[in-house]
View 1 (cartoon, rainbow, N blue to C red):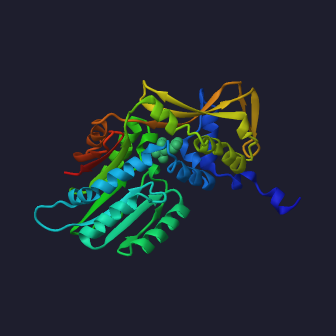
View 2: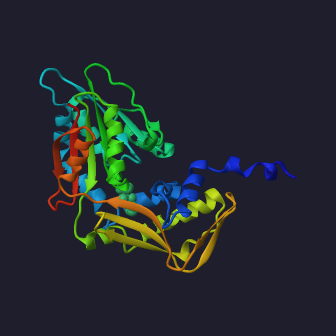
Length: 330
Ligand code: AVJ
């Protein structure tokens, strides 16, 4: 036997991915967690989605930030007695494309700024760091590569410093409302009086607009959804035929969320060679791959308040499609 062939398969398998797949595909109905979207190809497809005409979220939030960044930064740094220096952290920073608007506003207000992006993808962080340091030299970038959903620790701020945590892009929408409140409370527990949290949430709107945003004409969202299967073929030696599944986007009004599913076009059996596991699909059976919760105006503030923040301001666009809220620690 060659050394390669005798290497235990387990040692090559990402156990985090393996556990997610075993739990999700043995449950009824079947599900897979949305973090599995973001391998290299998936992250690229997501960046493409943010530029689609139907995907209003990114450009709407960007417009809100562009219009109100100075006020957001000024409020976060507001202090009666002495000047404060803001330090900006960001959860799920990714390519940090929209963040640069806030960083520029902070530089204009205080001269320089320390930016601490947190993301599971170390490569995304390196790319973002290089770009920001080149474009805005007054920003020092200190990236932190980790899965912030499993707990995290910020470096304590010094005297005269305040931390502003960004959680923008509607990433919070992927969490069940109770999990979302729990995650924000964990962030709150790391902060001190005067620190703040800037939260971006997508708002409920007409169904047609929502459906188009998650089922675009070019098929990019369908490719993004199906890429999860391609990723599992690679990571777990599975034999999914991505074209044996159909992309489905559904508005669930009872739960106020968009859902993405992959629907099996036929009865089929998929084998995971790395796990010695098989998943059976009936014709029409679905895998639920993502929920994106949509909030009512006022609910984002409630979410912040439940996590222990005092909601201090919120900003929206003319159509009332997206909302950015600032919460502060009293
Ligand atoms: C990155 C979670 C905000 O829910 O809209 C884009 C991901 N899914 N198209 C979202 C996504 C389908 C996105 N978030």
